[in-house]
Image (tube, rainbow, N blue to C red; front, side, top):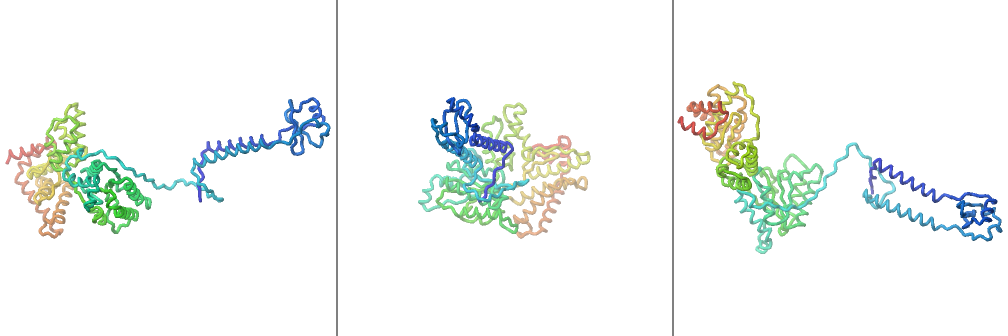
Length: 555
């Protein structure tokens, strides 16, 4: 067996060497012969003067313990017998040395035991002990995993706008509370529940709420934490996670972003990810239906997940968590505004936040509250929400410095988009020279005319610029890209081309038709476009309310 000797620093080495030297000096002082040799004449004088207290023999010498000179010695062969006849001569005792060695053996054993405990040596040390030479750059050690359950304090009452999801999960909660009721009836609960939805809709909070409502331990892991650079560590973490859950059953295992480890196995080989995925599949097959363990996982994209995870007996129940509707947004806002003094219509705030998820609504409320405090107001009002809405959606952007010519092009470009968004009554609060907060279509099912209205808005800036200048600027790339994506989805995903079967020709025909229709509509309403240009040029922004009022005055 191999051991690696500990690395001493300089102070430890000095202390060790000093202790050894002191021990050797003590041994030398105690073991050396300390008696001084005397002559026969000197010995005779000591005996005749009654200076001898004790006499003993050792190794051919006679030792005298005297009152004044300490211990002296003389060769026994030099002493006449009549000189020491009246003295009691004893052999030298060796018990003192035995106690001395016992004492030092005890100290040495205690020191070795402490050294061993400090550095963790094994019990057996081989004759030949290899010494490990440290490298300039040490190899990384695989991290240890410590799986521990957490107690969730999130309840369904803390989450707004999840009525449909709550109904689906109440059955899971009842099963975790009363498993015998289901077993006696011969029913089984799904081993895995997959929460599917875009980021920020509250999938993690929902899983925590299930654990809190059922009052069971909650084991949280991110799918990314299973994907390790160390071979076998991902599979080990999966095994440890399920082992810990089994010991604390009934329990909930929640795996966030499971698509990080559960992606489809294809041509690009990744042995570590595949090994981890195989271990996850094995663990889900391994625990009994009566174990009291429910695995909840979350993903933003179910399409990339391996089919083996989605089959019956694993994640056989799927719950889709969509972006909140207007009513659900109102319920979420009410939760976040409970502790914040406000004077506003929550329903109005909910209507103007189309496309916001739960996380965005939380950020919106917080930003509005911070703005209210900066302005030394005592209540949050609707104008605070209007002021920070674009910041939450798009981030704080630096206004671009435009030349006079660039500004003319930008004003015309945005005026065309204002006209299209107002004409087709798309949801937006305001449009500025540098930004337009027009929410992309999110409702399901999406009707063809609704998708085409959004495409026309993204083409309106280009069409408007060509009507005035005969060309458009490079900033149209984003709008053109969005328009192409929407047309591609219409043809290849929704079957909205000239036939149900998709074709590239259909994409070109649709985008050309919508562009031409938008150009003719803008040309017929040049007067309205001019009004929008004037407003944008003066104020650099225009609200939907003002745009509608301006349009109604001219029509």
